[in-house]
Figure (cartoon, rainbow, N blue to C red):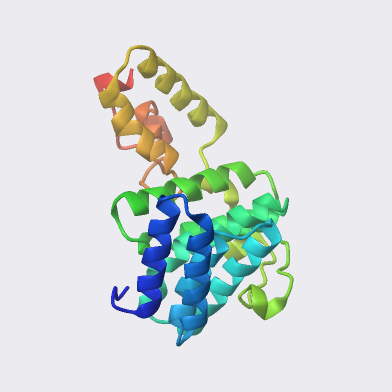
Length: 239
């Protein structure tokens, strides 16, 4: 984003007000950014921050939908990196409203575009939030229709195949998850920081798309060659 854009300057000032606990001033600055926006790109940025300061989950969802609609209208590389967190925000808003199936669809969309998010801590936050959302909503079937048509981005999802395949692939199976949890508990008990540091990012950010063979680097902690994994032995820290 161009830091010299008036909308961006207002949003940066709003974030500083947020950090200082001045929520009323922050909301006023974000509202000013919305009113100042000269095009869909600038409106998309302002809507993102306005969504964070709404008093009801319905209004939070509405502003996140507004943000999505504006990003779709822009339709170029400037907004590509917005989509992972945008879909995460929509998924979280739907969860708060009890619309779990639709939330899962949004989290699946975020997983499809996670590679477009900026790197570093921001990218890690997106990945962890997506993975958590998929895990928490995985038991719900997809297929809820958007209400409001174009106001929700103009998309209608009719099944899990529409958002990237079987949702079961997007979270660890029970056996692997249980084993990883056992290992994490063991490492915590002995304060094995190296093992925790190497494993937790992969576990917390697992989206069901990495790796070859058995399909997940975490599985290679304990799986055997008979399940198709190229790893034939476990490192010492994975015991």
